[in-house]
Length: 91
Image 1 (cartoon, one colour):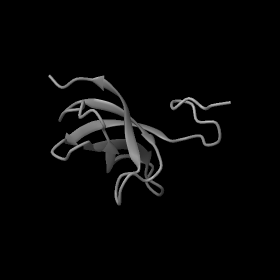
Image 2 (cartoon, helix red, strand yellow; image 1 turned 45 degrees about the vertical axis):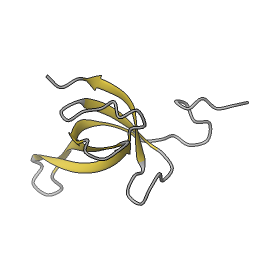
Image 3 (cartoon, helix red, strand yellow; image 1 turned 90 degrees about the vertical axis):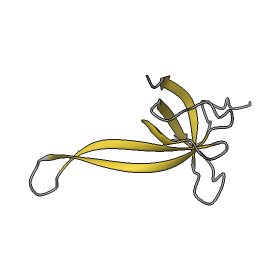
């Protein structure tokens, strides 16, 4: 039985949504993923932003686009994610 690329059979892969902040590299975009977490001691909600390098084979995503990325095997030294879909185009 072959596993579809969107539904891996063994691993439950992480999926994140973020905004493309750079598309200057070939087949790579930098995605800023913002998460809201509660501070451990003070309880205040704080935003944490992480920049992730994602593989974009078609060079489809541009700066400002909202994209969904999925964890994947290492593609290069820094790339461990791939763009699965562009959710919203930049205006």
